[in-house]
Amino acid sequence: MSGKPQYDESAVLNAAIGVFWGHGYANASISELTEATGLSRSSLYQRFGDKDGLFNECLRLYTDRVLRRMNSIQSDSAKVRVEALLREFLPGNAGTDHRKGCLLSRSLTEQADLTAAGKMTMSEGIRQQRQIVLNILLEGQQTGEIARDVDAELLAWYYFGIMQSVVNLPSAGASRQTLSQLIDISMSAWPKDEVIPSDSDGTT
Image (tube, rainbow, N blue to C red; front, top):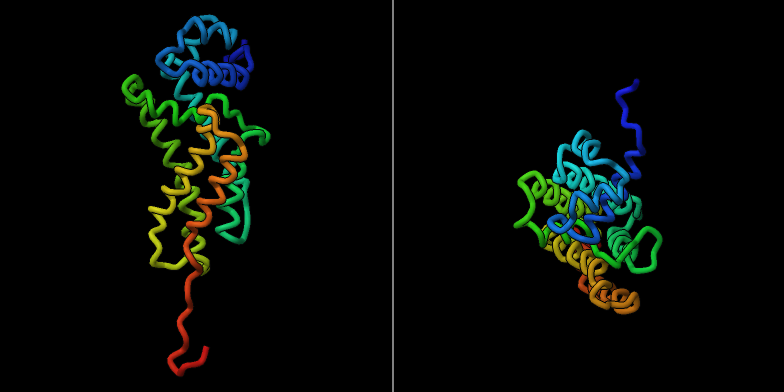
């Protein structure tokens, strides 16, 4: 017989993500995971090692999906791209489930319960998300859309924080309209275009 798993691994991971998303890492029991995934305990341990191994694979899959979605937003304008990125995650958009918030953010609140491997996977996922925002801003500086003296690192944290608010605050009762207005306000903080100095002879 083939050594390949005799089950749909993508379906297994999706089911496990639902359990971790709904209950958190610490409260997700092996029994809940086996019931949701359809795997026996022996199959789960054989394939993933333990709950932590399954959790790490779920986090990586979740992160890959979010990163692909973020990278799908394209524009020649850094400002347009950042705003579109924020609005992509508004409640009601396809592929967005705001009932549970961001799995990485939830994991961040559970650091005390995570293993070293889990913390590393979580931290790397968050870093990669923020890096996409930072790269957009750095490209804006290269094209002259954003002044070179603007602190792109700080601005990346700011807009990444707004994105996390858009994803997580619906579970606290924030409406789509409220979050859309939040994005409007955040974009009013966008730095002014870089000013190109006049030539030395006084001409522009």
